Image 1 (cartoon, one colour):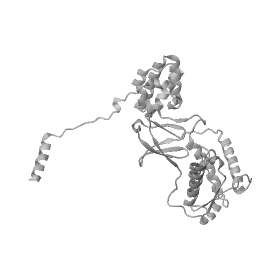
Image 2: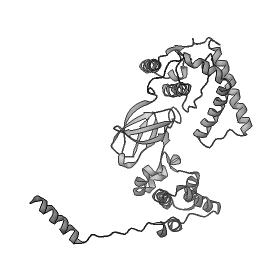
Image 3: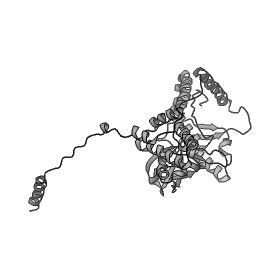
Image 4: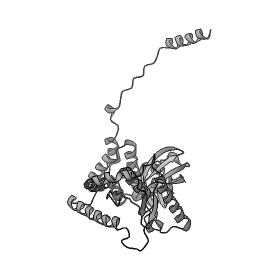
Length: 344
């Protein structure tokens, strides 16, 4: 927030205070504004520094100072324990929180379909507030510094090795990747809400960023499509997978496995569940198959694999016809004859 005009920007973060969250949110605000002030003031960032050793704290401070330097801003902080020192900012923040609560009451629910929907909701509130003070913002813009040619680094980069489990562990979170990457050294860029995975300088994929469940329990970000090939070889591994709850792509699959375990031997249940996941992967019918499984669950029936394979088999009428026309041998002879004439 700018103290004079009252321009404000809000950025939804998922993992609490961190340099990555600060860098991403601050730069989003500066680029939305179209300029940078000469000074940036933050609180003591105690949550970001908590549980860090001395070297890590110094590294975070250096990165924050470098970020401000990229935008020509002087980094300053509030004095710890002195209330209302930054009242021109803290008080409007309180009003903004009340505005969010009021908007949620008018909306009728605090449930959102996904993170993008919630961010759009917050952006709309911020946009309305800034629209009311547009003339003040325009008056302050000439006093701002020009932005640099591009954004500064707002991610943390790590190198990981993909294990034989088709996965890697980073910051106490287990991530699966395609099995073709087993043994590869990957470059991972950690943002607040996602991971960009690169092989050398080539972007491979973006993964949702996970969080540890607790101080002594890892988190898991699992895509069944990454591990289905190994499960086909050892379907009984499904029974005791640490990340089994995260493996199922939809609730219908998890409930189906629970029903299978109740209604048939464990070995057969695991085999059938792996076959169901394989069908969803091979036919690209994850959502449609989930709907069928829901119908079977409601009818208290166990899924029939033969019926499912028939239902989701490729439609012969939908396959394109391919006609291959073979060139006559005389064309090759003419081609060879022309080459010999050129050589002569």
